[in-house]
Length: 221
Image (cartoon, rainbow, N blue to C red):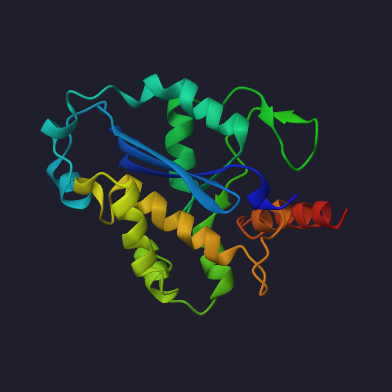
């Protein structure tokens, strides 16, 4: 199975594990193209700190009237049941999800037809894909990856269509999710433009050598 043959939900969260999520952006790719973007502000578990506002631009007043992230269980569980998750250095997104909900409902494995698992992953990780494609890079930050691949104009065009106008910059969840989606679209393809298999892109997304070998072995069979 090619990764582009099923929905891929590219996620970005603003917030942290102590205070909770203040904003999410989820870009759904299907057929390798942007099919949807979902985003909203969320009320965290504690007031937003000034140091956090300096990063993501959201103040306590911006989010106090919003519903808490925990109310979106059905939405995230449904996304996981329909496809795989992706993020730029996915450890943060996975940890924030697991802090709220340790696991989803039973969902397809996708690599093993008919098998279901209760895990948010395995994740496609665009940060690791970037490092694999350009191992001599000194920075794998999202903005640096977009610049290195010449995707700035494409990102601005996508942001003008999909992002709320006030949240169309780096460290805004919908914008960062779009940036990661464009990285995936560019990196997880062959020289001829054909999408990689799901097993290959997941193998390139993990830092666990044993897990990588297992995934590559599944690709062979």
